[in-house]
Image 1 (spheres, rainbow, N blue to C red):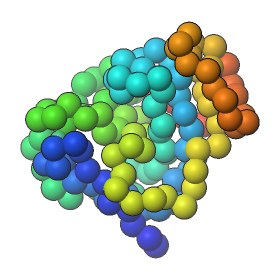
Image 2: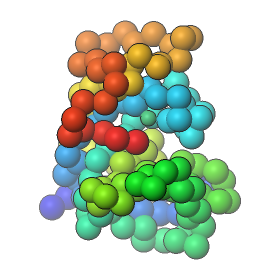
Image 3: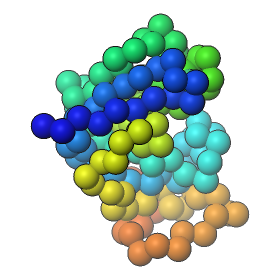
Image 4: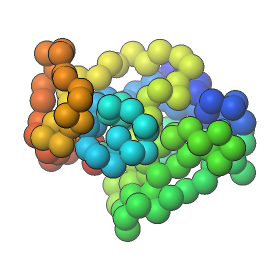
Amino acid sequence: MKYLKGSCLCQKVKIQVADRFEYIGNCHCSECRKFSGSAFATAAGIDFEDFKIIEGKEFVSIYQKTDNTALGFCRNCGSSLFSQKTQTRKYNIRLGILDDSPTKKPTFHIFVSSKAPWYDITDNLTKFNEMPIGTVDN
Ligand SMILES: [Zn+2]
Ligand SMILES: [Zn+2]
């Protein structure tokens, strides 16, 4: 199994993740917009077992968004890192933290109905107005 390395902006937090993401998609919901500070967040789903913080665990802060969703970010530089789904035991990794290239690429957009009005989607990936069952839930 190939492993990918990733890090936050200040390099205090270093992560490792198996290169076997279940899905990769761009989420356009307003909460991902806030958390990332960008038009959308590229989220990649992986099992708890396949994701590891290998350095700087003490710098990872958790914001408990809902009962089932916790957002992780670096408390030193503010980089958003992942969301943690306690019910399904999945991480949705914020793909921008990767320093290596994953084999899979994004294949869809979700929450297109709430995308930023100032952003136009110009690619041909599948668009979902909300969240299709069995894919990303940020
Ligand atoms: Zn940092
Ligand atoms: Zn979202």
